[in-house]
Length: 106
Image (cartoon, rainbow, N blue to C red; front, side):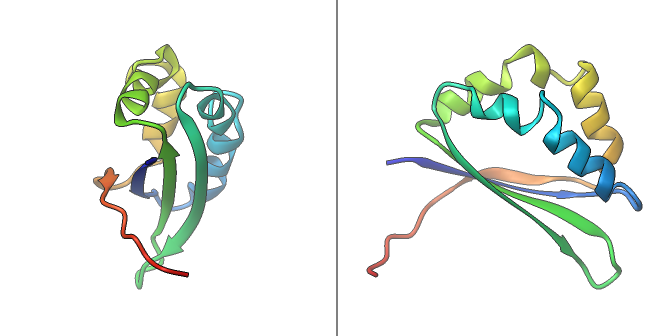
């Protein structure tokens, strides 16, 4: 069964368009899609009552180990240029981790 990863990342004011550029960068989702074990991703924005946007992400991976290996890629290290752009858009503590999926009948 696939593993479901979720992230909610609060964005700094005025950084929504910069974030879209990061997602569409060749080192963004395009790189993620090439990683062993990656299955799919869904993304959205949500604004809270104060108008702060958060980026919401759901990814499916074959295993949590595949995701961990992905995070060891040089373009996912905290000190690389891509991740520095990522961090420059964040305002607040991201919430992220693997979820327990719920089985349901159609």
